[in-house]
Image (tube, rainbow, N blue to C red; front, side, top):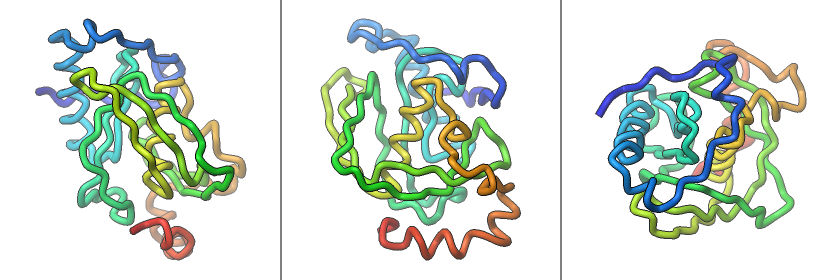
Amino acid sequence: MTVLEIAKVGDPALRERANEIDRAELRSAEVQALIDDLIETMRAAGGAGLAANQVASLYRVAVIEVEHNRRYPYKPPIPLTVIVNPTIEPLSEQTLLINEGCLSVPDLRGDVERLLEVRVSYLDRDGVPRETIAGGLTAGTFQHEIDHLNGVLFLDRVSDPRSFTTWEEFERHHKQDFLRRIEPYSA
C-alpha cells in the first residue's frame, strides 16, 4: 500500500465527475490496489473519507472511516466502508448545518447544509450491492464524499461565505458553538 499525494483545490481532477466501474474493472488488481491506497492515504492524513478524484483518479470509488479521528473527534464512529458507484436518496427534507473541512482544501472550513438522513446504495469492494441508511454527521460524511465523485467541493455548497474560517480560528472562535449545535447528531 502507498500513501498517495492528495490533490488540492485547483487540480482539474477535483472538478471531474468520476466514471462508473463495472464488476470486472472492480476486480482488477489496479482498482483493488487503488482502494488499498485510498484507505492508507485517508488514514495517514487523518481524513474521515477520501474519494478517488482526490488522488487524481477518476474511478467512482471512495472510502469512509471514522474511528478516533483526530481531525473530527466529534464525529460518530463509521466502520471502514468502501463505496463504489454510490447513489444517494434523501429520506427526509430536514437539513443540518455542518461546519466541514476537506483534505483537498487545506486549512479551510465552512458551513454546509446537508440532508439529515439519506440512503446510500453502492457496491462494496467485492462487487456486492450494499445499502446504508445514515443520519446526522454520518449522513454529511457520505454526502461530502459522493459530492467529490460528482466533481463538487464543499466550497461550492457553502451558502454563507462569512462562515469560512481557518482550522485554527475555528478552534479558537467557533468550535464550542458548533459542538453545541451538533450534539444531538454526534452520538
